[in-house]
Length: 316
Length: 302
Image (cartoon, rainbow over all chains, first blue to last red):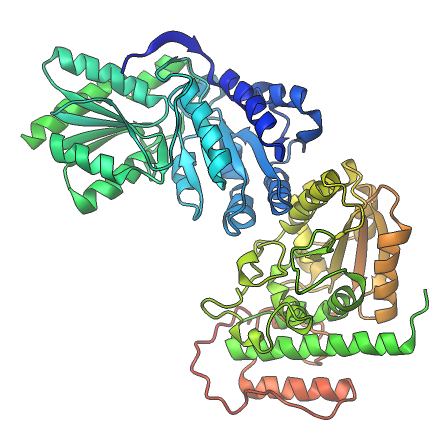
């Protein structure tokens, strides 16, 4: 699957899709905790001022209010940086929203490495692990703008609680405008036979770059994009590793309990093969430049390539 | 507003039944919080059997009043009301804390008529604010959202985030009730974390404040009436209800050791007999006294 050369900030796609969904779903309410120009929810505020609720810098209240609105039949979308959703307001998300299984759609902005210079307090790396551990919660991490838009449309159709990530990173467009997203369904981005690279979020792009580099070395890598982390595409994962016999997982997040472990849970029980996990290893992300940080935390294509080569060597 | 003696008597009878059923379910399940359920018995009776518009046949009807028991550990008082009001079949209370029954802390999935899941303190008022905003957007001017909080619960920062936002959005359809029973889980409020001047705090956050004796039925009813009709001035209203933890059973009164404590069958029997004497009823003990208890006991208290 070839990438389009157009690069656009995912936040703009978020704002534009919000407006589209606002027209379609009249009961969609956007809630903000003093960040709407950063998250680009400002588009929604401009289009639907009566359906935009500002709660101030109070994330616990943000999610509690959302629970109340959902139980009144609205579809609230409480928005904040991913760190504040997953760290500050987790109890409210767990008990006020997930326990009663309320229709709340949670976008987590500014995730992982590309949050870059803000430093460890603002770089969300645990959110995948935390959110997928919440019963009733569905979790997704989009690769590119059209992936994000499709996730948002599906989330509104299938209902919450849903958590999805928005990365402030310029990623080429991999999908068409008519791209659709289905919970629990992955996408084979590239077929291969020697190793599977499972990617989620923007890291699938780095997996694609890795596959191209591996090809030059005569190694055939299959790349599978799993935007839907929970539920996860068990069938596609097992089908691929049955063919390739080893794998690398890549995520823009901590390797503790996150996407890699979600893939491993499927593999270890059903078809054990060697798997290496690429991501942030038990560390806060320090301030720095984006690509500099990807290199520092060993998450660049060269690192994925090294892990893939090692897995293949250990397997054969 | 002067209440007829008969009406007060009727509501006090409900408060008595709320206490009785609370002891029955806590003793039977061997888990629960007697003190905090007893301190809100009059408030719950006045809400469920006079003030709130409810219909057990239509638990989700739009024009209903909503109640969030933010101090969700006082769930026995709520379950008792739901059973007495016909939301739950008779004897449902013996499913308290049983698998598939009524959750230890109130949960939406446990029974019709429960508006929010809770347990971790400090969350309910935010949910109430969300409901109130939603009701306003639906142009439902009549319904009110009641939120009952513990005194210790308002140590939580989330409460004050919610309080600030209710005033900011002029939510005069929100009525918060602070059950000021003076005792927390492991000590008295002034020792654990002082909340005074509590009335001034709510007023400073932009709320109307009414201070009452939460066990005086006439005061409770009048405060609820005032909060709904008189104080509807664009501000939310907080009722500070001075109460006694464990009110109605001498050994439990004003005693934080009865915050979390399940009485054994003999103690439950003694408590219920004492309650009936206090209320001038024929002496009646624990209905399951002769049932052999095989359940594990869990004492969160001392």
